[in-house]
Length: 426
Image (tube, rainbow, N blue to C red):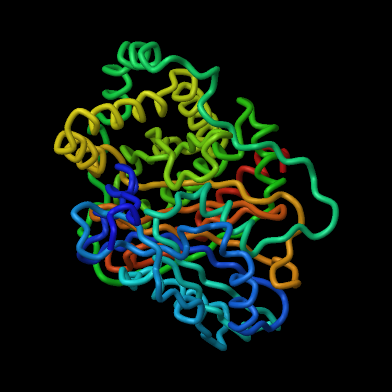
């Protein structure tokens, strides 16, 4: 096997691959619910025609390589990656998705799999698609979903490309100097261990439970526009999660304060369509001690606005990348520190999907949910995705630490209703 056949993972993808250990898995999951009953063979036929656009999905980790590397899988067989499951009801689908989050993807094959759940109660079907985070971050996975499965249904609204780092590209030296001047304050703001202990700070157990909260995207947009301090959809998402966590912590008798959220920030630009992972993050203090839902939303909006104005996410990206180039050991130590549960307690990601009606296998897309794996001492993960006018909160939790996930999911839904009522004057 010639070395020319190997494609080394870049530093970020290799770091993500190494995070998978013990009871923590390294994949994300999309749960795609569509109309009609569909067989696994239909999915295999469609993917076989389109998978060539994404070569990584036909590659596996190279065995016995000195460093992690991709190599074409000579024994690739679509039948091993797309399997039939079902029938099931909605609760059964959640159990299948939860089980999928516990099962490590086979490293002797390309790191993805689809369970076809059909029939799903109500004359529907579901595709439970796992893909390793080393292959794709949220934006890349959504791009793959559009190329492999999702198709526009009817006339589509104009969509703007996701924004990369703001401003014109700068010379590397200039960019580094500017980042260096911002770095000490940004590192303290973002990575300072200011969070308080929470019930989420538990070693990761072997089980996973999932829940979904599905709401109208336009409702969240209207809430943000009508708020006393204009807020983005993502601000409303964070405020909804904050409200849900406030109620959940209150029921457990835990302090309703000191909880910080890690918010991934996509840095994908127009020239890196093939990039697997290209994101950074900001850390936001969730205003759980504030009793008024609108005040919580305004506090979140102020916090995210300040992080964006200071370009904290870009500064952190420069810090981690430059440190890894200087010393891989130092880079790993810094990344380990960034996972301290006092730095953040919960990760809340939000990835935009296609805006107009979509079809999958010729049937209408009914629901799109996203799930991401928890981390050790971070027993809850919230993954938000929007598509076809709906927005879904996907909750993945260790049930041994978060034994009442339905309280949290209901709390998120209740918070959205409370915000809607507050801005509407009802």
